[in-house]
Length: 250
Figure 1 (cartoon, helix red, strand yellow):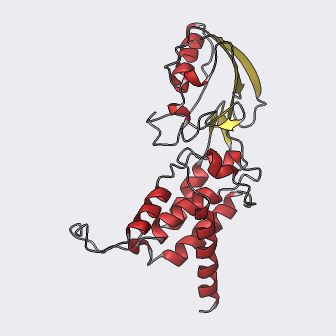
Figure 2 (cartoon, helix red, strand yellow; figure 1 turned 60 degrees about the vertical axis):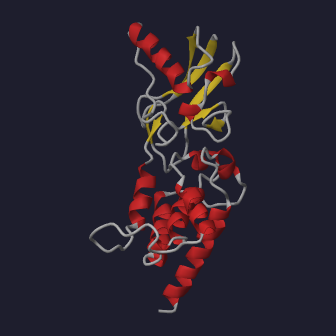
């Protein structure tokens, strides 16, 4: 496959960025998207040019680092896959592919396709820990939990914090991310001790980071590589209202 790549290049957050055209040839349809970028960077290094900076780590769809805006969609044309799981067979020979970083005021630019998603880390930190007795690990069946609750908690915990939800939202809202992190603990007994303070602190930190409000367009869930459902946002709203009502009555 021979392709034309239009890639966003920007030296740093203060420099002016632009789309730059690159040609890549003899790309195997079995390559992953990141492997294709590796081929491009090897070519650029051989020619004495600065390689394209992009985030990656596990390349197994687990870490959430490979966050690219491809042809106008977070993670590209595939459904339920991260950029590293996207294969070049999703494109045709001769295609032009636009590659940009995720864009949100809460995700500052670092270089080229790399952004700072530290805001997500700070939201997680604001949520704190769960209270647990020290000592040996408890038996797995010590606290019976309904399977339906376990399944929902597990589905919420599947969120990898890639930021696709923010990139797709017209308001750059982080509600799907925060709701998934709140839900995974709110539905389990181990998370109920700090349940109220957790949701209040995480929502407050989300607002402080500058994320936008949710208007329920559903774009976040539609592009989520882990297909986190929208009902998590409804659960987050219920948890937050209940926590605030409880606090106001103290």
